[in-house]
Length: 553
Image 1 (cartoon, rainbow, N blue to C red):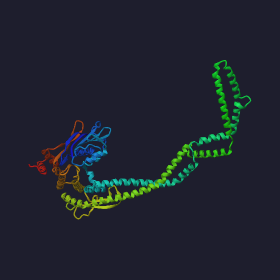
Image 2 (cartoon, one colour):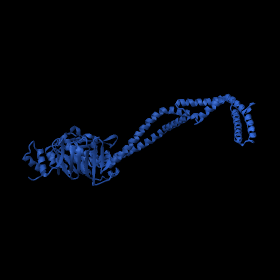
Image 3 (cartoon, rainbow, N blue to C red):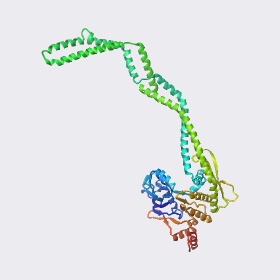
Image 4 (cartoon, rainbow, N blue to C red):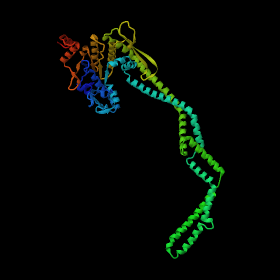
């Protein structure tokens, strides 16, 4: 339950500290006094989104902090899931800075807004007039039946299966589309791959073939040049080898007279050996080089194929062609594997459909099992709320498909007056009847739940007189099991509360300020008398106020 609420720089509230208690608390005040500002502030620490519009002073940050007693509400699991320290008295804080950035904390540990909302949804149910309109919504109606059935774990298991089912279904659809698209390009990819594969490309063959072809096409010129070179070095009448041999002999003789010539003579000797070796290599190379028209044609055809493939695929090397061939191979393998994957997914989808059918059947059975009880309890509560002839029925139909909540469609049928015909709520219920219907449903559901707190934001719209007192009685009865906070403009409801807060506004130094205060017994008499009166609070209004509060004169 909510123990304490602290608000700073929020809309019309510069600073507010308010403590709340178990049981039934009402909040009253004139229109525009800021009663619903409390709802907005509480919403911030329960994960609702906000921006700089909530800042009273645009240069300061807004801080809302709530202290909750949560030790008895089995919340350890959700704290553990999000790696948060569980404390029986936990503090939730939300900050909005002037730049619009939001920060959230639970027990001083930073959390995301989603985590704050997930935990907040298990702490407080804020019921507003807008939510009363949701009574016409099929999803909301189904949620109310599920809450009464109390099969949250079964529903969670179903939703987990449903998520996986949709994932497999989406993947199957994608694979089928890919297979259809691939069928159109498979032939083209196969042709390209076969062409490259048949080419039997080797990584370095282009360079080697180009070099060999260059030699073969210039074989005669190469032979002529090498013969001339050999002649100069060794075969001509006057050649380098002979002249170096003569030089070596001269220097060998001279070294007998000067040792300084020995190094030079050795170098000449080395050069002579090197030249003879060069001549041998030139002879060998020249003998190997010969014009081969057949070989030239073969190399030319091979290079033409390589050049054609490079041009076709817009690359410049054999390595890139090999990469393309490997990529084509992978694509073709992928296309081939799609058929197998589609088969696997169809089998998986069928299995998951059977699992969903089984769990959805359990959900349907549990829903059907509580419908009669809900209808009977609703008739009792509606009778207490001044609608003795009202009829309430829950219609359940089977959907031809899986939804996120099973295969059931819930529809609330209602009529308020004797002799009426059961019809959908939105077609027959007035505003006041909707309020009473919603209160009746909430009272049934929350009597079974472990939710600590419910806040009613003017659920008494369209209600007055004796019915208002009965609405207050139901809220008071609900407060035996949970904390009930009601923002109301009806004195009959305010008189049923255990404690009473007054929302009021006054002019501050620079702007209008809203605030809350806890009323004493005498203050409560005056406030309820004000609610009963026009402009002037009469003594008779005070007497009535005491009667509503069960106070003695």
